[in-house]
Length: 230
Image (tube, rainbow, N blue to C red; front, side):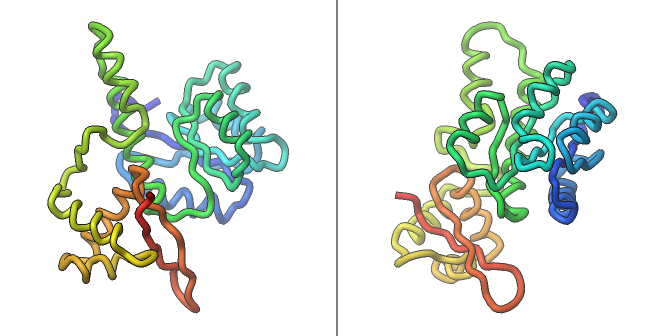
């Protein structure tokens, strides 16, 4: 564990070598995360956790030897208290329920890109820091920690650098759109930069107020399209 240094060590587990490499690249773009290893089977994951002692495991469920959720109780039996974030194509309700019962900190469906993973890692880092530093003097302290567990801030609070006024404009653009909008389209409609529009759109997506779909063209990366969730 790396609590004293402030670094969060991560083990990436995915049966696809190329996918694992992409996920590793994503994770290492987010401070203070550091990938300490990768594994491609359930048994490799168990051995890697024992050897590397990561703080967080990014766990695929469709592994060649074990179902990913079966890895978690073996880690607990071995005395490992690392957190687990499920990253998988498994959309079955039973898999999601099983992950919740196993205490995973998040569940992200494939395919996704960096903008999907980044806010989840940042929320995890914030909540982990809160759990490590909280002094429990009474029920209010417990409630404060649990109420924000791996979720966006409540009460309308915006992340640093976002303003309420601009957020309202972006929300209005999403609500009034005929279908989906891109960051560039929202930026043009509101009169802000595309980068700024993207930040607000991703915030609404992270907080569950907007849906994201991907539009594939003939070349390049797919375009992210946003719509307000009714």
